[in-house]
Length: 365
Image (cartoon, rainbow, N blue to C red):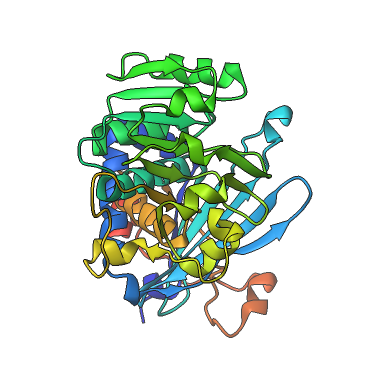
Protein backbone atom coordinates (compact mmCIF):
# COMPACT_ATOMS: atom_id res chain seq x y z
CA UNK A 1 0.00 0.00 0.00
CA UNK A 2 1.40 3.40 -0.97
CA UNK A 3 2.20 6.11 1.51
CA UNK A 4 -0.45 8.31 -0.11
CA UNK A 5 -3.16 5.74 0.64
CA UNK A 6 -1.83 4.77 4.08
CA UNK A 7 -1.75 8.36 5.26
CA UNK A 8 -4.46 10.15 3.31
CA UNK A 9 -4.55 13.88 3.53
CA UNK A 10 -7.88 15.51 4.31
CA UNK A 11 -9.34 18.28 2.17
CA UNK A 12 -10.48 21.18 4.36
CA UNK A 13 -13.17 23.59 3.18
CA UNK A 14 -13.43 26.57 5.51
CA UNK A 15 -16.33 28.99 5.83
CA UNK A 16 -14.42 31.43 3.62
CA UNK A 17 -13.84 28.65 1.06
CA UNK A 18 -17.56 27.93 0.87
CA UNK A 19 -18.40 31.61 0.49
CA UNK A 20 -15.92 31.83 -2.36
CA UNK A 21 -17.30 28.65 -3.93
CA UNK A 22 -20.90 29.91 -3.88
CA UNK A 23 -19.87 33.32 -5.17
CA UNK A 24 -17.95 31.79 -8.07
CA UNK A 25 -20.54 29.18 -9.02
CA UNK A 26 -23.54 31.35 -8.23
CA UNK A 27 -26.14 30.52 -5.58
CA UNK A 28 -28.76 29.29 -8.11
CA UNK A 29 -26.28 26.79 -9.57
CA UNK A 30 -25.34 25.56 -6.10
CA UNK A 31 -28.96 25.10 -5.03
CA UNK A 32 -29.83 23.33 -8.28
CA UNK A 33 -26.72 21.15 -8.06
CA UNK A 34 -27.40 20.11 -4.47
CA UNK A 35 -31.06 19.41 -5.32
CA UNK A 36 -30.00 17.17 -8.21
CA UNK A 37 -27.52 15.34 -5.98
CA UNK A 38 -30.18 14.86 -3.27
CA UNK A 39 -32.65 13.47 -5.81
CA UNK A 40 -30.06 11.03 -7.17
CA UNK A 41 -29.15 9.85 -3.66
CA UNK A 42 -32.80 9.49 -2.61
CA UNK A 43 -33.30 7.25 -5.63
CA UNK A 44 -30.71 4.86 -4.15
CA UNK A 45 -32.26 5.05 -0.69
CA UNK A 46 -31.88 1.34 0.07
CA UNK A 47 -28.09 1.53 -0.41
CA UNK A 48 -27.66 3.69 2.71
CA UNK A 49 -27.20 2.68 6.33
CA UNK A 50 -29.66 5.08 7.97
CA UNK A 51 -30.30 6.14 11.53
CA UNK A 52 -32.12 8.94 13.30
CA UNK A 53 -29.78 11.67 14.52
CA UNK A 54 -28.34 11.69 18.01
CA UNK A 55 -29.42 14.78 19.95
CA UNK A 56 -28.34 16.43 23.19
CA UNK A 57 -31.06 18.80 24.40
CA UNK A 58 -30.83 21.64 26.88
CA UNK A 59 -33.21 24.36 28.00
CA UNK A 60 -31.77 26.76 25.41
CA UNK A 61 -31.21 24.54 22.40
CA UNK A 62 -29.98 21.29 20.94
CA UNK A 63 -26.68 19.87 19.62
CA UNK A 64 -26.93 16.98 17.18
CA UNK A 65 -24.88 14.46 15.24
CA UNK A 66 -26.30 13.19 11.94
CA UNK A 67 -24.56 10.05 10.54
CA UNK A 68 -25.15 8.08 7.34
CA UNK A 69 -23.14 5.78 5.08
CA UNK A 70 -23.26 3.85 1.85
CA UNK A 71 -20.80 1.13 0.83
CA UNK A 72 -18.07 3.65 -0.03
CA UNK A 73 -18.44 6.74 2.15
CA UNK A 74 -19.44 7.60 5.70
CA UNK A 75 -20.70 11.10 6.46
CA UNK A 76 -21.76 12.97 9.53
CA UNK A 77 -22.85 16.48 10.38
CA UNK A 78 -22.43 18.29 13.68
CA UNK A 79 -25.16 20.91 14.03
CA UNK A 80 -26.78 22.98 16.74
CA UNK A 81 -30.07 24.83 17.05
CA UNK A 82 -30.14 27.68 19.58
CA UNK A 83 -33.00 30.12 18.86
CA UNK A 84 -31.67 32.82 21.21
CA UNK A 85 -28.17 32.91 19.75
CA UNK A 86 -28.87 36.12 17.84
CA UNK A 87 -28.89 37.93 21.18
CA UNK A 88 -25.22 36.97 21.53
CA UNK A 89 -24.30 37.79 17.95
CA UNK A 90 -24.20 34.12 16.95
CA UNK A 91 -26.12 32.19 14.26
CA UNK A 92 -29.05 30.06 15.36
CA UNK A 93 -27.57 27.16 13.40
CA UNK A 94 -23.84 26.32 13.14
CA UNK A 95 -22.51 23.16 11.52
CA UNK A 96 -19.58 21.28 10.09
CA UNK A 97 -19.30 17.87 8.44
CA UNK A 98 -16.97 15.02 7.51
CA UNK A 99 -16.71 12.51 4.68
CA UNK A 100 -14.64 9.37 5.31
CA UNK A 101 -13.75 6.20 3.43
CA UNK A 102 -15.78 3.21 4.59
CA UNK A 103 -12.99 0.81 3.56
CA UNK A 104 -10.35 2.34 5.83
CA UNK A 105 -12.12 4.91 7.98
CA UNK A 106 -9.75 7.57 6.69
CA UNK A 107 -11.18 11.12 6.85
CA UNK A 108 -11.22 12.62 3.36
CA UNK A 109 -13.15 15.87 3.79
CA UNK A 110 -13.70 18.30 6.66
CA UNK A 111 -16.09 21.06 5.68
CA UNK A 112 -18.08 24.03 6.83
CA UNK A 113 -21.80 23.20 6.82
CA UNK A 114 -23.54 26.32 8.17
CA UNK A 115 -23.87 28.02 4.79
CA UNK A 116 -24.12 24.63 3.12
CA UNK A 117 -27.01 23.62 5.40
CA UNK A 118 -28.99 26.66 4.26
CA UNK A 119 -28.33 25.69 0.64
CA UNK A 120 -29.27 22.03 1.15
CA UNK A 121 -32.40 22.82 3.20
CA UNK A 122 -33.65 25.13 0.47
CA UNK A 123 -32.76 22.58 -2.19
CA UNK A 124 -34.65 19.83 -0.35
CA UNK A 125 -37.70 22.06 0.18
CA UNK A 126 -37.86 23.02 -3.48
CA UNK A 127 -37.33 19.44 -4.64
CA UNK A 128 -40.21 18.24 -2.48
CA UNK A 129 -42.47 21.05 -3.68
CA UNK A 130 -41.58 20.39 -7.31
CA UNK A 131 -42.89 16.85 -6.80
CA UNK A 132 -45.81 17.50 -4.43
CA UNK A 133 -47.18 20.99 -5.13
CA UNK A 134 -49.54 21.84 -7.97
CA UNK A 135 -47.55 22.40 -11.17
CA UNK A 136 -49.06 25.87 -11.61
CA UNK A 137 -47.91 27.12 -8.17
CA UNK A 138 -46.54 30.66 -8.35
CA UNK A 139 -47.43 32.26 -4.99
CA UNK A 140 -45.70 31.34 -1.74
CA UNK A 141 -46.19 32.49 1.83
CA UNK A 142 -42.90 32.49 3.74
CA UNK A 143 -43.49 32.45 7.49
CA UNK A 144 -40.27 33.05 9.42
CA UNK A 145 -37.84 35.45 7.74
CA UNK A 146 -34.58 34.55 9.44
CA UNK A 147 -31.24 33.26 8.17
CA UNK A 148 -32.61 30.59 5.82
CA UNK A 149 -35.45 32.58 4.27
CA UNK A 150 -33.56 34.07 1.31
CA UNK A 151 -32.32 30.62 0.29
CA UNK A 152 -35.86 29.25 0.44
CA UNK A 153 -37.28 32.09 -1.66
CA UNK A 154 -34.64 31.76 -4.37
CA UNK A 155 -34.83 27.97 -4.48
CA UNK A 156 -38.59 28.12 -5.01
CA UNK A 157 -38.13 30.79 -7.66
CA UNK A 158 -35.68 28.70 -9.66
CA UNK A 159 -36.83 25.12 -9.10
CA UNK A 160 -40.59 25.51 -8.65
CA UNK A 161 -41.54 28.68 -10.54
CA UNK A 162 -42.66 30.85 -7.63
CA UNK A 163 -42.94 34.50 -8.65
CA UNK A 164 -44.69 36.10 -5.66
CA UNK A 165 -43.54 35.78 -2.04
CA UNK A 166 -45.64 36.96 0.89
CA UNK A 167 -43.70 37.48 4.10
CA UNK A 168 -44.50 37.40 7.78
CA UNK A 169 -42.30 37.31 10.85
CA UNK A 170 -42.98 38.35 14.43
CA UNK A 171 -39.80 40.43 14.11
CA UNK A 172 -40.41 43.23 11.56
CA UNK A 173 -36.65 43.74 11.21
CA UNK A 174 -36.27 40.19 9.89
CA UNK A 175 -38.84 40.84 7.16
CA UNK A 176 -37.17 44.15 6.29
CA UNK A 177 -33.84 42.33 5.96
CA UNK A 178 -35.40 39.74 3.66
CA UNK A 179 -37.05 42.40 1.50
CA UNK A 180 -33.73 44.21 1.09
CA UNK A 181 -31.91 41.00 0.16
CA UNK A 182 -34.54 40.06 -2.46
CA UNK A 183 -34.38 43.37 -4.32
CA UNK A 184 -33.57 42.70 -7.96
CA UNK A 185 -34.14 38.97 -7.67
CA UNK A 186 -37.16 38.83 -9.95
CA UNK A 187 -39.69 38.21 -7.20
CA UNK A 188 -42.76 40.20 -6.25
CA UNK A 189 -42.41 40.60 -2.48
CA UNK A 190 -45.07 41.74 -0.04
CA UNK A 191 -44.77 42.06 3.75
CA UNK A 192 -47.96 40.94 5.50
CA UNK A 193 -49.42 41.80 8.87
CA UNK A 194 -50.06 38.25 10.06
CA UNK A 195 -49.63 34.61 9.15
CA UNK A 196 -53.27 34.46 8.05
CA UNK A 197 -52.77 37.48 5.79
CA UNK A 198 -49.67 35.94 4.20
CA UNK A 199 -51.23 32.51 3.69
CA UNK A 200 -54.48 33.69 2.10
CA UNK A 201 -54.48 32.77 -1.59
CA UNK A 202 -51.01 31.18 -1.50
CA UNK A 203 -50.26 28.04 -3.51
CA UNK A 204 -47.37 27.04 -1.25
CA UNK A 205 -46.80 27.85 2.42
CA UNK A 206 -43.28 27.52 3.82
CA UNK A 207 -42.82 27.76 7.58
CA UNK A 208 -39.23 28.14 8.77
CA UNK A 209 -39.46 29.44 12.33
CA UNK A 210 -36.88 28.94 15.06
CA UNK A 211 -38.61 29.01 18.46
CA UNK A 212 -38.21 25.72 20.32
CA UNK A 213 -41.88 25.46 21.29
CA UNK A 214 -45.00 23.52 20.41
CA UNK A 215 -46.39 26.30 18.24
CA UNK A 216 -49.48 26.33 16.05
CA UNK A 217 -48.39 28.79 13.38
CA UNK A 218 -50.72 27.31 10.78
CA UNK A 219 -54.33 26.66 11.79
CA UNK A 220 -56.83 24.51 9.86
CA UNK A 221 -58.88 27.56 8.88
CA UNK A 222 -55.90 29.01 7.00
CA UNK A 223 -55.50 26.02 4.70
CA UNK A 224 -57.11 26.22 1.26
CA UNK A 225 -57.76 23.37 -1.21
CA UNK A 226 -54.72 22.50 -3.29
CA UNK A 227 -52.16 24.08 -0.97
CA UNK A 228 -48.75 22.55 -0.42
CA UNK A 229 -47.28 23.13 3.04
CA UNK A 230 -43.51 22.99 3.42
CA UNK A 231 -43.02 22.72 7.20
CA UNK A 232 -39.30 23.23 7.89
CA UNK A 233 -39.01 24.75 11.36
CA UNK A 234 -40.37 21.90 13.50
CA UNK A 235 -37.30 19.69 13.83
CA UNK A 236 -36.91 18.41 17.37
CA UNK A 237 -39.04 17.03 20.21
CA UNK A 238 -41.28 19.72 21.65
CA UNK A 239 -41.03 21.94 18.56
CA UNK A 240 -43.89 22.11 16.08
CA UNK A 241 -45.44 24.62 13.66
CA UNK A 242 -48.71 23.06 12.49
CA UNK A 243 -51.98 22.54 14.32
CA UNK A 244 -52.75 18.83 14.29
CA UNK A 245 -55.91 19.58 12.34
CA UNK A 246 -53.75 20.68 9.40
CA UNK A 247 -52.09 17.27 9.40
CA UNK A 248 -55.35 15.38 9.76
CA UNK A 249 -56.76 17.01 6.62
CA UNK A 250 -53.64 16.52 4.46
CA UNK A 251 -51.50 13.89 2.80
CA UNK A 252 -48.25 14.00 4.77
CA UNK A 253 -44.82 13.18 3.39
CA UNK A 254 -41.61 12.79 5.41
CA UNK A 255 -37.91 12.10 4.94
CA UNK A 256 -36.99 9.24 7.32
CA UNK A 257 -40.10 8.19 9.22
CA UNK A 258 -38.41 6.92 12.43
CA UNK A 259 -36.74 10.33 12.86
CA UNK A 260 -39.75 12.43 11.87
CA UNK A 261 -42.00 10.58 14.34
CA UNK A 262 -39.75 11.96 17.09
CA UNK A 263 -38.88 15.40 15.74
CA UNK A 264 -41.42 16.51 13.15
CA UNK A 265 -44.87 17.99 13.34
CA UNK A 266 -46.23 14.43 13.32
CA UNK A 267 -44.80 13.99 16.84
CA UNK A 268 -48.21 15.23 18.02
CA UNK A 269 -50.04 12.49 16.09
CA UNK A 270 -50.68 8.85 17.09
CA UNK A 271 -48.08 6.26 16.12
CA UNK A 272 -50.31 4.83 13.39
CA UNK A 273 -50.92 8.21 11.70
CA UNK A 274 -50.27 7.53 8.02
CA UNK A 275 -47.30 9.19 6.33
CA UNK A 276 -45.32 8.46 3.16
CA UNK A 277 -41.54 8.61 2.91
CA UNK A 278 -40.58 10.96 0.11
CA UNK A 279 -38.13 8.55 -1.54
CA UNK A 280 -41.04 6.24 -2.33
CA UNK A 281 -42.75 9.01 -4.30
CA UNK A 282 -39.56 9.81 -6.20
CA UNK A 283 -39.05 6.15 -7.09
CA UNK A 284 -42.67 5.67 -8.19
CA UNK A 285 -43.50 3.25 -5.37
CA UNK A 286 -46.10 5.55 -3.81
CA UNK A 287 -48.33 8.34 -5.13
CA UNK A 288 -47.64 11.98 -4.37
CA UNK A 289 -50.28 14.56 -5.21
CA UNK A 290 -53.30 12.86 -6.78
CA UNK A 291 -55.54 15.85 -7.58
CA UNK A 292 -55.49 19.63 -7.67
CA UNK A 293 -57.64 20.04 -4.54
CA UNK A 294 -55.49 17.78 -2.36
CA UNK A 295 -53.58 19.41 0.51
CA UNK A 296 -50.04 18.09 0.81
CA UNK A 297 -47.61 18.59 3.69
CA UNK A 298 -43.87 17.94 3.59
CA UNK A 299 -42.95 17.53 7.26
CA UNK A 300 -39.24 18.26 6.86
CA UNK A 301 -36.87 17.86 9.79
CA UNK A 302 -33.62 17.57 7.82
CA UNK A 303 -32.07 14.16 7.26
CA UNK A 304 -28.43 13.06 7.10
CA UNK A 305 -28.74 11.84 3.51
CA UNK A 306 -29.26 15.45 2.40
CA UNK A 307 -26.04 16.47 4.15
CA UNK A 308 -24.21 13.56 2.51
CA UNK A 309 -25.45 14.86 -0.86
CA UNK A 310 -24.44 18.42 -0.04
CA UNK A 311 -20.99 17.38 1.19
CA UNK A 312 -20.24 15.36 -1.94
CA UNK A 313 -21.50 18.18 -4.18
CA UNK A 314 -19.40 20.82 -2.43
CA UNK A 315 -16.35 18.54 -2.42
CA UNK A 316 -16.62 18.00 -6.17
CA UNK A 317 -17.35 21.67 -6.90
CA UNK A 318 -14.37 22.77 -4.79
CA UNK A 319 -12.15 20.31 -6.63
CA UNK A 320 -13.22 21.71 -9.99
CA UNK A 321 -12.52 25.27 -8.83
CA UNK A 322 -9.27 24.46 -7.00
CA UNK A 323 -10.70 25.65 -3.68
CA UNK A 324 -9.66 24.22 -0.31
CA UNK A 325 -6.47 23.10 1.39
CA UNK A 326 -4.92 19.87 2.59
CA UNK A 327 -4.74 19.31 6.36
CA UNK A 328 -3.18 16.49 8.34
CA UNK A 329 -5.68 14.95 10.74
CA UNK A 330 -3.92 11.58 11.08
CA UNK A 331 -0.43 11.46 12.65
CA UNK A 332 2.06 9.94 10.22
CA UNK A 333 4.36 7.20 11.51
CA UNK A 334 6.76 4.92 9.69
CA UNK A 335 5.24 2.00 11.58
CA UNK A 336 1.47 2.48 12.04
CA UNK A 337 1.62 0.13 15.06
CA UNK A 338 4.13 2.42 16.74
CA UNK A 339 2.10 5.58 17.33
CA UNK A 340 4.26 6.32 20.38
CA UNK A 341 7.18 6.75 18.01
CA UNK A 342 5.87 10.07 16.71
CA UNK A 343 6.32 11.50 20.21
CA UNK A 344 9.95 10.39 20.24
CA UNK A 345 10.66 12.24 17.05
CA UNK A 346 11.23 9.16 14.92
CA UNK A 347 11.56 9.91 11.20
CA UNK A 348 8.31 10.32 9.35
CA UNK A 349 7.69 8.39 6.14
CA UNK A 350 8.98 9.95 2.97
CA UNK A 351 6.32 12.42 1.91
CA UNK A 352 4.34 11.67 -1.22
CA UNK A 353 4.20 14.36 -3.90
CA UNK A 354 1.92 17.24 -3.00
CA UNK A 355 -1.55 16.70 -4.39
CA UNK A 356 -3.64 19.75 -5.22
CA UNK A 357 -7.20 19.76 -3.85
CA UNK A 358 -8.68 19.25 -7.30
CA UNK A 359 -6.48 16.23 -8.02
CA UNK A 360 -6.91 14.81 -4.55
CA UNK A 361 -10.70 15.00 -4.66
CA UNK A 362 -10.77 13.38 -8.07
CA UNK A 363 -8.66 10.48 -6.77
CA UNK A 364 -10.86 9.93 -3.72
CA UNK A 365 -14.30 10.57 -5.21
